Length: 137
Image 1 (cartoon, rainbow, N blue to C red):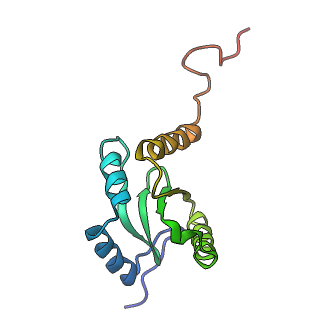
Image 2: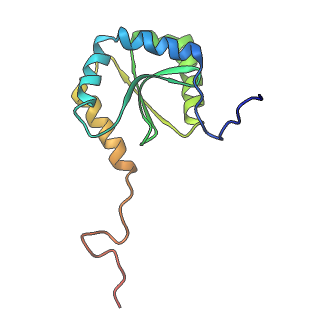
Image 3: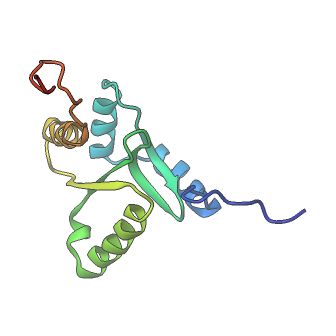
């Protein structure tokens, strides 16, 4: 048996990331608990502490190709910020957008920014359903 063929753009799990994700789901931070509780009340399908290649992302919505990260103060350190930038480059290289928020940001504000980002990405139908988008002769 040979190596399984990989689909271009597919995200393959790494055992180490999957193991870390399970541990992180069992021990979420206070901010992660609060955001998860809020996300579950929406129509969006997010996964929490999901393995994503060699990484574990805080929240991911595959339908909208959006990753949401909650960061504490340690992410302000230059070496951590550098790792975050490399990680974000890897994630965006797979067609996902990364939104980062501080742990101390109010959950309602975070949700509002997520919805604003998603609604900005939603194309307006042409012609618009309100009329005026079509050509009249």
